[in-house]
Every structure is written in structure tokens, then in C-alpha cells.
Image (cartoon, rainbow, N blue to C red):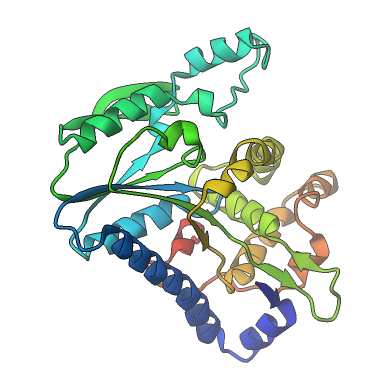
Length: 321
């Protein structure tokens, strides 16, 4: 969907932000309702079942919060839903590095291990655990420690209860190498991403694209939660985008359901936060940032840092008061 920046600014100037927020939340909630109906239709009122929902999408699309909210919504219908992060099945960093050095992908003195490729995951271990779960066995899931670069074994127990769905989220979950060969009653693949664009009515060349939205989301989140500078995000962004083009976008063809995680109010907040972060930068650094977001576009949006958004909004993954 293409929104008018001028139109949104008019609503904010008229003190009608609540309308914009409620409309944005409503459009996302409708998608959840459609998804729940689709799940219910596929299960056809069974008293016992096991399903797997694979959630994939590019960086800063809201995969984690979406998965947690879907878990809660399924739980309210009597389904035992559990979120599993595919990231916890990463091989140890040293193992992956050795493989990638041997393949000539990186040099021995490089620390830039490619975590985007499916080979960085222990897919065999993942499938073994999932099959054990389907058979009704108690399964101990690992947990990946990004600080040490090691997979910690047997950390989180899961076991079937009767009406069970695993929500498996991660960048490679829509890869057939991950989901093929696991027999379940329901297998659903969801591709989540902000798809909306924001365009100036007075100057159509001024546009905020979904890629810009995701860059701003990641910049704000990394700065608030990980203490990462704007320039650090800029350093990582090209490799993030390359990984998306190589490993994520080609898998969209396997999606059963596309979920639009755009919120029509988010440019108010994101551009406001970004402008504050950019103020601290040198002219040279600002020029780097403007490779990924359009200066005229972000300056065309009225600022609004404090938004009264619901606690169960997916956008809370990127909203910090």
C-alpha cells in the first residue's frame, strides 16, 4: 500500500494521531484474524494434532514479536503454541568459520562469518529434535550464545500436550532444506515484511520505501537495545541486504501467507528518532547514512516521538520511549 506523507502529516497536525494509530493496528489485527481462520480451517476441528508454522522475513520485519503474539493468540484458542528460534541451532562459530575458510569464502584472519547461509545452521540436529517432538518425546532444545559463539546444549525442554503448534522463526525457516522431511498435521510458511511505501503528494520523488523503514527500525533498535551506533548499523547493512537477496527473497515462493508488518504511523516515530541520531554525526558520516535513507523524505515527515500504541503491537519491537 502507498500512503501519502502529506495526508498523514495533516492528521497529526489536526491532533488525530489516535485515528492513524487505531487504523494501523486494525489493518494488522485483520491479518492475524485471517491467519487464525486459515489455521483452523486446515486443522478441521481435530482433537489432537501437531503443526509447525515457519516464520521468515528480512531483517527488522518484526519476526520475533509477531511469533510471540501468534503464540499468545493460538494459546487463547486452547492450542499449546511454542516459539522456537532457528538461531539457537547455529553451529559453533569456530566450526562455521573453519568450513567457510576451507571453502574460500573468508580468510583465516577474518572474523566476518556468514551467519545468513543455511549451512551455518545445524539443520540435521534441528530435524532430529523436531521429529522427536512429533513422536511425543520430551525434547531439550539448544540455545545459541552469540557472545561466546557457541551452541549451549539441552537448555529448554518442550513436549507435546495434544493440540500443539511450534512457531519456528528465523531467516532460513522457509528454506526447503529446513522444513522438508518433517511430517506434521499442519505445515504453514509465513513471510513477514513491511510492504508499505510513503510518498509525498506534492513531490512523488520523495518516497520512504520498505527498505528505508527496515533500516530505520534496525538503527533505532540496535542503538536502544545493543548500544550500537548509527555508523555500526551502516557498516552491517550492506551485508544484511546481500544476505536477504541471496537467502531470503528467493524463498518467498514457498510462502503460504504474506504478513504485512507496516504501521501507517511509524514514520512519525522513526524519522524523529533517526533525525536526533543523525544530528550527532559529522557531514561525512551523514553522507553514509543518506545512502540508505533519503534525506528529503525523512525531513518531510512531522516528528512525533511519543505514541500511545497498544502493548500487543508488533511495532513495540522497535518502539522505545
